[in-house]
Image 1 (cartoon, rainbow, N blue to C red):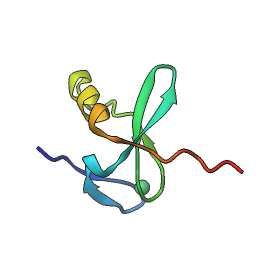
Image 2: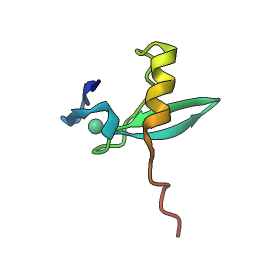
Image 3: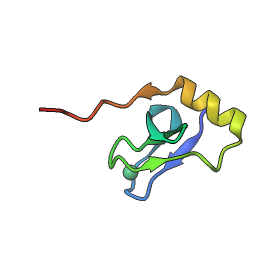
Length: 65
Ligand SMILES: [Zn+2]
């Protein structure tokens, strides 16, 4: 099952191609691969949210110099 997802920046794609990011406070979300806008998936039922997060790849950590 794929979920088509659109972002304010104009990116449209499969929810599965987003990366997960820890938002703090025990919350995980997915970030847009184009603009990096985080989405806490509050619009998804909790069970579905966990499944999506579990499948998502980790976002690249911020570059540290
Ligand atoms: Zn975006």
